[in-house]
Image (cartoon, rainbow over all chains, first blue to last red; front, side, top):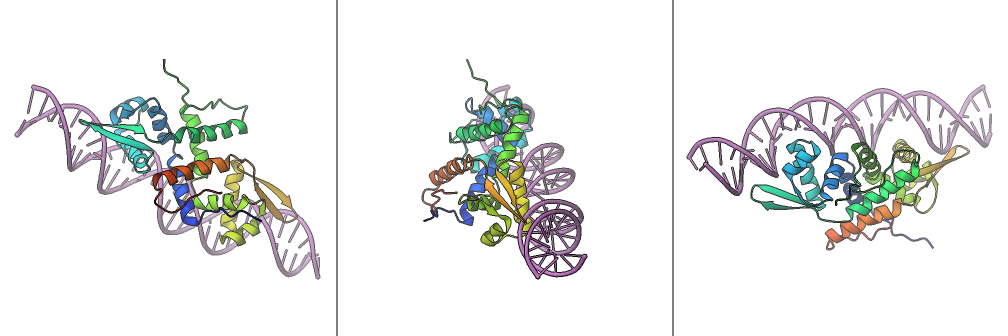
Length: 111
Length: 111
DNA sequence: TTCTTATATAACTAAATGGTTGTTTAGCGA
DNA sequence: TCGCTAAACAACCATTTAGTTATATAAGAA
């Protein structure tokens, strides 16, 4: 007797959309930076060397996906990781990558 | 004293590339189908209602990412999930989605 | 060999995406 | 008020991507 815990297409679209958020290296860079604690946009721009518009765009995407939170302080806007599921999720992928090419460069994950 | 287990850009590109594989609902559908056991291309085509070319393309992408394995049997080619990290990974995302909009449709994950 | 079935692949199209540039909005200090 | 700075946003471009159609390759059957 076969288990049928299958997701329908709409549910899979939601799951896929969530994975898509993490499928961009620049966004992962931002998340990695936020791992150390909240930062405002300017700090991220300086730290990561991306343009302000680009950082803002990525932050908006992650904010709408409820991956980061925002708090306005004066003219600055501070972003923080709002869901710690981010870290084990990335660690799992890193583990997989490590398993695949153990020989290759270190990927001891940290984000 | 701050921990610095940060990944460099190249490593993040690899992680992002892995997430990208999972960022498509059709590929998730295929993985969900393969959860019940290996299938050949034709079976997947029939079961999922996608075109043969499309299924083949997605399978190739996942095969190259070492997410599925392939075994030729006569003219048929059987694919199977080759790394069980797929399931907990998806479950984690589903859990997140459930947490976010608990009110909304069920996402008791299964893939 | 010829026919048929199974899979892969190539070429193409439409849509989505990341990044840039320029502009706009908002808050603060002089 | 007038700057000045921070962040968001809009418009645009180049690239990527999913899917389709058509073709090629491969293996078995007649």
